[in-house]
Structure formats: C-alpha cells, structure tokens
Length: 89
Image 1 (tube, rainbow, N blue to C red):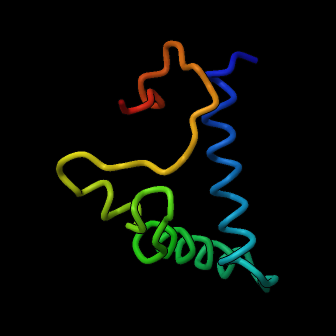
Image 2 (cartoon, helix red, strand yellow):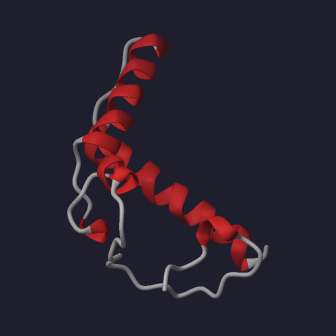
Image 3 (tube, helix red, strand yellow):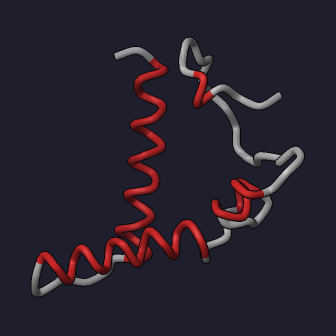
C-alpha cells in the first residue's frame, strides 16, 4: 500500500479511536440508539471538542476560519498525488 493511501486510513483510525474511547463508552440496546449516539458523538467531536493540533479550536471553527492556521503536529510522510493531505507550508 502506498504511503498516500495509508495516511487517510491513519487519520480515520485516529478519529474512530477518539469517538469510541471518549464519546461512545457504553453498550446500546438497539441499532437506533447506537446510531443516535454516534451522530451525537460526531457532532461533539466537530463542534464542541477543542483540538490541540489546531490551536485549541474545534474542527468546525478551524474550517470556518480565514487566514493561516498553525498546525501543531509533525508530518512524518512525504505526500505524492494526494492534494487533500498536502502539508501547509
């Protein structure tokens, strides 16, 4: 698997781990209850939970912000052909 293909998967795994570990800590009686809880957890993750890697903003705040955004993470990969994950210089 090419590095550019592994990187989005690693990001998705990180988000899934946070959702499961911090926001979805119980068992559910029905699939309907589980879906509701997942939707709520995703909303909390995107709109209420500040992220250290983006200046303690929520993802929604970072997305709507204009101007440069300092990112606080190390980039260990060299990207090739995946514009969505190009590092900002």
